[in-house]
Image: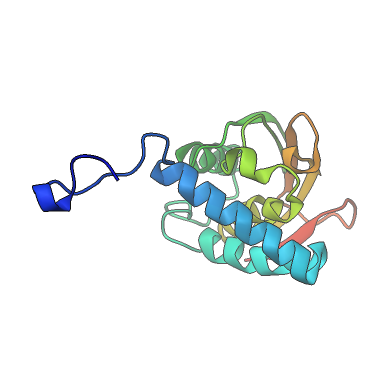
Length: 172
């Protein structure tokens, strides 16, 4: 204990190297994801985290104002801005017809995402829920992921059903 204590009228503070709020919350989320993955396996962990992601995608802060748009460029810009607000670095690689492709070099969960692929279900479900609520349909595929050891994330969002392609489907 330091020379200055509660008895001196000064409450002890956190150590100088204590994590800030954001780092603490990222560590918390990473530890929860790792625990779930270790206890129930990746597939079930993805399901649990997907439920949370879906709820986040339905939140007022995630929704596209004046939903009902079918404009893929508007959906892309909204999803990019949403991720930027929470610490992601998503870039719109392309908008071709009803397909949006994003790349990302910085996960909102920072280094806590490494080795925890179930956390990708947050992006999958937030993107899918927001896009489907706006357009009626979305299929999201995380083709590359920092969490899986790739050098970036690459995510496609299809806004029209075509019967082809991988990914998780969402309906508005």
